[in-house]
Length: 156
Image (cartoon, rainbow, N blue to C red):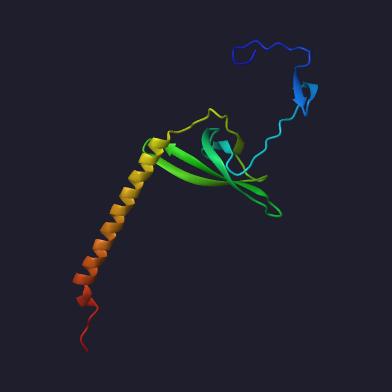
């Protein structure tokens, strides 16, 4: 019994009819290997350990943005969105054979982990905040130049 479910062991093979190039084959799915084909633009799901303590994992939506053909560590470059209430950050992951505590898989066509309008609203809000900070900093610079010049203009 696992998770309250009764498991039934059977020696019967789990098979599926698969057509490849017009040829039908019966495949034992217990021994079949699924091969994923990734390309730039492929939507992916990322399962990433959220902290160094415990076993807490989070899932993020991402997209493959490139392949880095390094000689020793070929990598898949993935942009993914970390969003929470009132915040949205685009982060990048270089996924390769040494990446720890992260798994990726192709995203199901129906997997939509966020709403476009909500993310755009959050990002637009961050832009407004940054523009206000820039304006405030320019005003402080102007005030400094105008009112603190006498500290630097010393008569000889």
